[in-house]
Length: 281
Length: 278
Image (cartoon, rainbow over all chains, first blue to last red; front, side, top):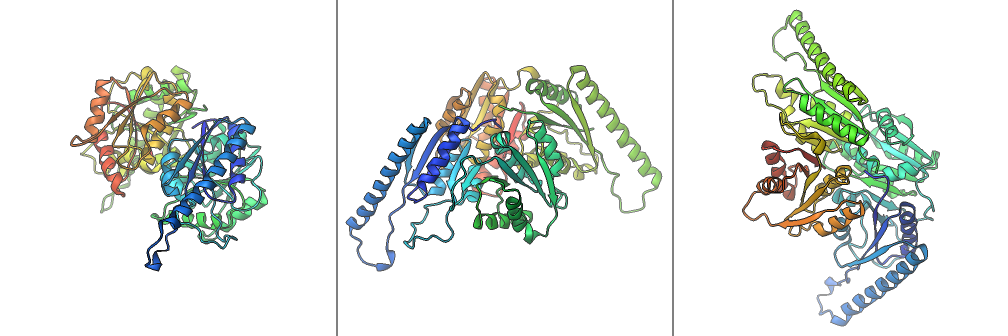
């Protein structure tokens, strides 16, 4: 557990939101004094397998060339922005599927930044598979905190001034809290939003508050008990009520019953996510 | 580095608590941490027939008496060392109680239990499984000390071996151990089959740790025929290491099964303290 993130991994790909992501990543790298690594995953060529016809190599080559041209342009934009901001950066290109590539590189950094995929893309062009990664899926694989940036709207310049912790007293929740420590230390206000922690025999929110005080993080605790299907909605309204600009929560697998409840929550949140979410497992 | 600010020590009434108290106080002092002593009260034995209330009362008295003795030993040691401390006792069994309390600590310290075969209540008590269960489900790092070992507390964490297979668990363990790694004199990251399993290469981890101010020597070995635990034990001995850092693995996934067996084998033949993360 650190007071800062020494290195940050930013996932980029062929995506109209690249510039916004780069700006957000550079902002965080400056704030935390981090080394910033951009990992660009090249989209695989789309194969029209259903034609049953011979696919001319030029067809594939054209796609590869186009993909590489976009990568090159994004790289140039990234380097220029980094130079302007005075941040030490590194560029990696990978042809692996995004989830695999980001997992492997992500295990050796302090924070991973990914874009949240748009559930209803406005661009009607077919998306190449394996382009984007789900932050919570990645959190399960990488074992490091994953910061998912919303697919819409402007990214706040100083995200994390007003943090909401979704606390159910589970191992995933405590992982997320400790992984978010650098954000918590720099926040103006932190709310521990206890959801069914006592009912589900988790560690009470008040105990978390006392522990965080020993890390010099002052928090406010607010507890609620809601039925399992209302958890996601309760969380979304708490975010809106408090104008939170960062949500910290555990990423849950799908195997355990309690996890399923919160796992479902994860998906509700992602579908309506308007604030960045820090996920951990 | 905020380091470890909050340590949780598990105390039991089976073995001696002297060593673990000494190690915990030393670590707490090193990091300026708060120290909580945790003890589970044994329930009255479960029997099918009617148990006279005098027996239950006597059991209760014994349990309370032992808890009070433990508490005095713990608090006296903390007081003598000027260590701020707190006492927590619970009627939950150790696994459940430590999990609850441990989620809001930075490091839990346990000693591998002496398995008492004669007491029927011990199955419920579940202590032999404590390190493994906490390693997997507490969400905070666990430091497991060998039973009754005379550990050089002041030098614990000076020479560290990190077991690296490139997995998420291994990454968790390394990051959980960062406060210790930052102060270590010598660290070796031993890669065992990291590249073959699609894991993160050890070289990336070494570079990352350098950014945290930890200088790490990279070593690599293919396990081949030799069991991983034997490789780890050999390396611990050969390089005079005093702490092993490794992931705690469950049994569910194929890859985990390989290292999962390692977790248990390491615990079975525990000679040096191990820090587990998951």
